[in-house]
Image (cartoon, rainbow, N blue to C red; front, side, top):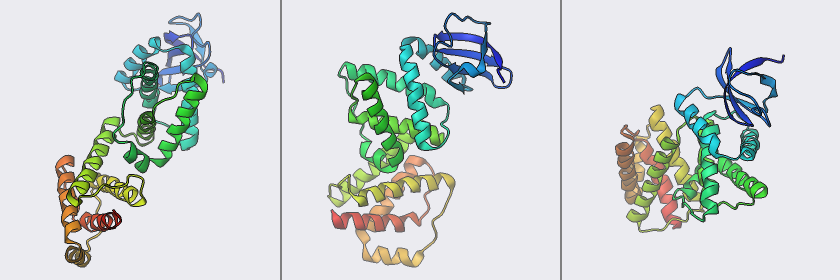
Amino acid sequence: MDEQITIDKVLNNNVVIAKHPSYQEVVLIGKGIGFSKKRGDFISFNKADKTFLLKNENEKQQYVNLIPHIEEGFIDFMNDLLFHIENRMGQELNEHIHVALTDHLAFALKRTQKNLQFTNPFLPEIESLYPKEYQIALEVVTMVYDKLGVQFPEGEVGFIALHIHSAVTDKTLREINRHNQLITNLVEIVEETMHVTIDKHSVDYHRLVQHLHRAIDRVYQDESIGDEIRLANMLKDEYPVCYNLAWKLIKVMQKQLNKPVDESEAIYLTIHLQRLTKKS
């Protein structure tokens, strides 16, 4: 069915916002879709290569303000990138990625062309926590280089991976970054307390980071991983330094997250810390 809808705003030749009877406002992207069109004109819904809703008023305004500053060819390219990400993740992306990643990549291109580089302090954690998103972000960076001839610095891979993770989990970037910062702090406490430098590419480091990440998720879901009093007492006697350090980490987590952390986390943290420090 060739549904005709009314244009509300032409953002450029390739992007329009239209009024839809069921979805209210909808963004339509397609080559030449806005060419010589104006508000009030009818347009075929099927003419768009990509359609998405922007229910959040702030995001809609951000998108409206952003588009005039971006080359029309780049909007087409963003379409290809988002299609690739959705395809590779095998699930629909939260629509806020249209605004957030377009905004991020447009400014990342300008930064890179001016040789202004942003370092990403969470790169090892991001690679460890979100391996699939990280791999797809590497592919995005390659696509940017192939299409535009711009080589993003390594730190950008991490930022793009976070945007992808945000779009598949519906977590905000702020929330994700706050948790990554907490994990980084916890790892630094381990290094300082045990007087070690942890190899960020080791399997045990990856296991520790994954465990801390899952522990944070369990805190938010009020989940327990079981009450093992005998095992706790045995570990306390056998590995007192690691057991005490595990409790130190738990107290930092409780303070940062402002929520209680289940006591049984100490058992599993002690095992991870013992394994890690033994090899270090």
